[in-house]
Image 1 (cartoon, rainbow, N blue to C red):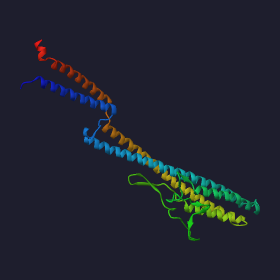
Image 2: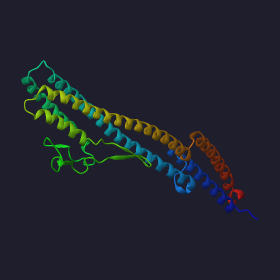
Image 3: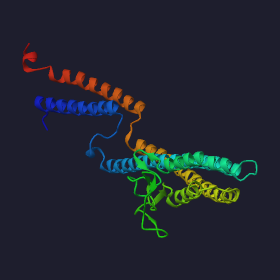
Image 4: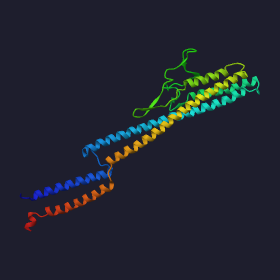
Length: 298
């Protein structure tokens, strides 16, 4: 086969173009830090990358959900802690009223502070976090106490809470895993409020009335402690789930990096090698193209 000048020129241009393409690809990888810039680069690796990215996004969403769970549990625990403090102060006053050292008049005077403690309990029952009432079940837009009165429907003794007040709120923290974030406080606050009403609304409180109240306060305190123990158990579960998600995020991110990210040392070395080849091609090409018929005739 006769090799013409045109064939040599075309071959040289084709090789130079291929060399430019390789250098362009390497330059793109160095600039982005990624092996792949379009699906056609490696369809299989791109599909894997999409799957890893979706998994990492899902883990990040679950981690944000855990933050919301912690927010609910921490604020509920703090509110119940304050309820416990109010009940302890109530117990001090009631114990004082049950002693022989004060008069009936002084026992009546204790009602003033007891009334303030009752109001404090109502404030705590209406604790809001991010605009939501945390003790109102799924009815988060409504306070348990409205205008100082517990929101009940029906008549005594068949009063029941408004719909939703005793419903659970659950947040998804993993595939198929949900954690209850709220504490249904209606019954607990209802009983505490009734206890205060029994002391405050009764005329001429006696030593015996205060003695009976001591036992009732003890029951309410036990209930608050039980609720806080339940919250503590859920917080431990959240911590374990958080550790699990962190480990999954780390492994998924590592696999995604191995699938997509370049090794800079390797790619830069390839770039230098390709540049040397390109320079050699240009040098050889210049020698092939330069001689022409005119050069020969000279």
